[in-house]
Length: 219
Image (tube, rainbow, N blue to C red; front, side, top):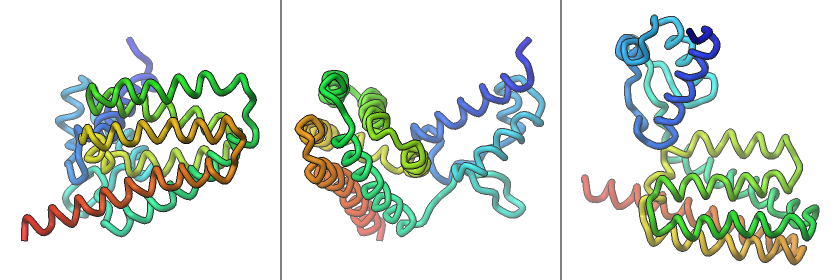
């Protein structure tokens, strides 16, 4: 029998994965009773997991309604996209400064994996994309910066799913990864930062355009 701690962690991983992948979209209600039945546990570990996800900013409580996957305002989402672009451009700059020749082949391989998966599925691409960006955080060797980036990425991941579901956007994004690797390999710190900022700022613009088009269509 799994320990209470392992059970709680398993449930947390499952719910977090569903939120980040969009299976539980923003606004989805997390019903304690249903989740307890699904995982064959009491409501106590489910309640603890919801508390943890709330503290991480992925879930919110509504008075007299319960817990829901957090729904951010458009301004909040665009602000987070902008902050992510600024922070990741700093990570790319540091990676260009501190990387060695031995670091480049694995980074290039990670970039190539995003190109290979871009034509397959959004889910495969999302996983490869995350691995590529995390490789850059490791090269930057700044845990505080990496922690801030990871926190923001987790909060906006449910909204980035729209972008990753567009095959053309996946391919364009993957090709930009090669430009980032090239700048890092050549020790061009400014170029690495600029390309990374543009790379993520384009996603902000794409998401903003998507919301505008959707709002107009529903008007």
